[in-house]
Length: 221
Ligand code: 0O2
Image (cartoon, rainbow, N blue to C red; front, side, top):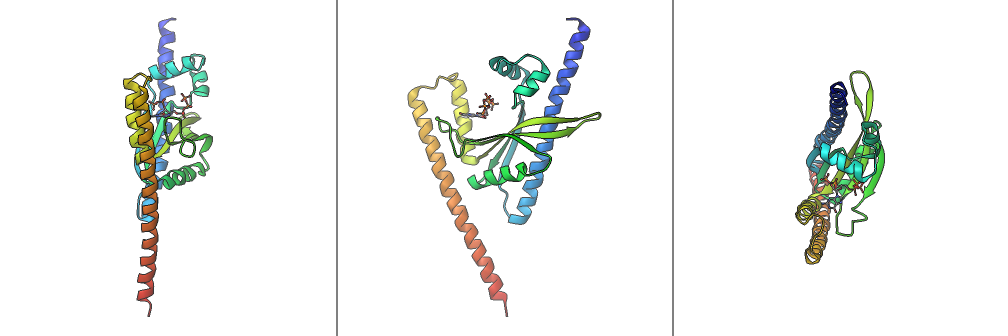
């Protein structure tokens, strides 16, 4: 390859990565709008935390090889859906679906795939709602549809997943059986906590509704 080819390749790759970064920016703007507006209407934020990441070039290359995908940017764009990743951590299980619905129903978002690991957890206990969404990014000379992997989970699911991720990497995927069993047990505990928090939240909401009514009624002549 000539130097000119390499310069062109670097230019194309930077443009490729930038489009994903812009996809993340667009999605995060939408999430922040929902967060602020929801807080205004419902007096609490269903979104606790938002984070994002761009896959590293090495990790893109690894995945492309694993998937037997041709090593060019067009092929990668068509077969790797998580170059851009956004993660939303919610307070309650019901909020994860609520946020997913709110984003999915926006007219400029196309939902390409949904994997509901909350309803159908992985064997190790992993829970999370995964959506691949396509979002248009308006560039100087074109509109680029960009895929973003959106993971929505509760704080408890996130707590579990980050620990599992660390352990998984520490043991390079070969987690000892006793540790694996304990992790699965911890996933059950996390799930119980989520269910408890959800029912407490429902109770408080109900109480709030009642007290609001009684205040209104009490104020009536
Ligand atoms: P990282 O470091 O988060 O980027 P594929 O993406 O094709 O390999 P698939 O089935 O399309 O596989 O992806 P899936 O199942 O939707 O999940 C991909 C991402 O979900 C992972 O990204 C993790 O972030 C998360 N995830 C899935 N399963 C687990 C799990 O068992 N434990 C934890 N902690 N996270 C999980 P990456 O690229 O693997 O990693």
